[in-house]
Image (cartoon, rainbow, N blue to C red; front, top):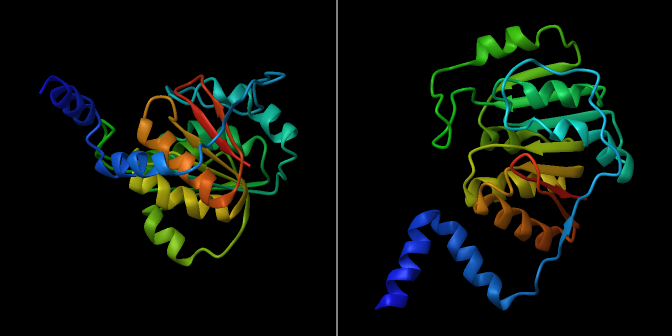
Length: 214
């Protein structure tokens, strides 16, 4: 009885049942190696927005990441723009950045009113950025393009991260995922995408975690 109560306490602490299904099914599969990502250098990008963001800190290692993995810097796609902090950082390194977001928040955010117009206005000085108000599910139905890098920072459920992330890993040279340390469902999804695609999984533990599939 005590063990059973302890089990349900753990499960209910993360009620993402798709996560638990994936976790239990992985017990019969080969272990996924998670390689710690330790940057060799840190340097702020040319562009940054003066807004609060849980992405802060990642901007200083993005140049190191691009250089280490020889990522091309022509086109970047971002799922999950929010106020645009990461979008502007990415625009410092890539010739063009497309940011896709509903701009109405999700169940893991405290904002649910539309911030689309405010974000478009805030990012208007950056000519190589294009914002699209869309759900990721609608976007991936029609986009047949390949990208140099795709950033995934959407609702932090296993099913959504896996669906968006698998498409992203298959349509990019490198896919990065925010919140691998703060949301176990995100890390588990990245592990399974690594298994499915054969891409290596690097993990940067700072700034709530950044998973890197390359």
